[in-house]
Image 1 (cartoon, rainbow, N blue to C red):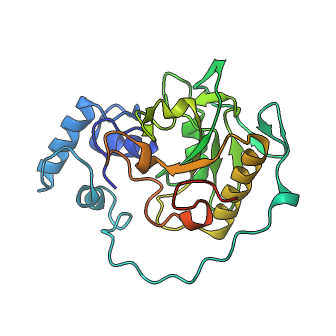
Image 2 (image 1 turned 180 degrees about the vertical axis):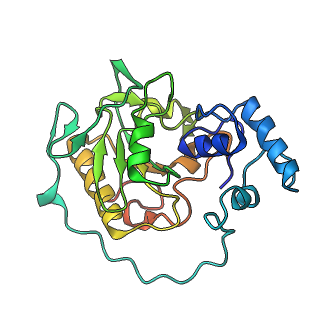
Image 3 (image 1 turned 90 degrees about the horizontal axis):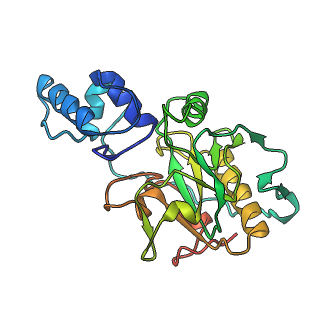
Length: 252
């Protein structure tokens, strides 16, 4: 994980609170300067970039340098979903909690053809939900869905409206990813993906694909964000083989 100038979100707020910067969730010049000062004070390389070394000092025991990957048991095959899909009415999933974001484009409809997966880097599901529903002047990040480790799903933005989740990004040579995509925020740091969280993602995406046939692509925030390397979510442990083929096409 690298958090640097241009990064946004709840992980930035935690860092800003730690270094005494204005906790607006945007890693700008002021935050970078205060991170440099923090790094110098703690004997770290004062590059203004928050990586594992800095995070391990800021939040002892919470962030660990990744070691060699341990072999994992084979993932169970995707469940048979067609009989259990969500109905979608007025671009909202029926039976799913809806807590409206305060920051999305209400006056312009978008035509979606892809899904972008994220992780929140938040310490609690409720904290993530609070962040994503803050007043617009306090947070300019939004997403269509928030999914918890226990499989809880909350929709925050209608599927025909633009949420602000990808930032500056490009997919297949086209910029403006927010104007064509569904953003799914997953609670956590991407270090583990419980089966309940995976199943919730599968069901949400299968439901969207059934209702919006143009939705055929799925990618990670790290794969679309510009410049490359700006984002690390959802991370290397996300079980892509259960969601897409090697052409990034949804297989559900």
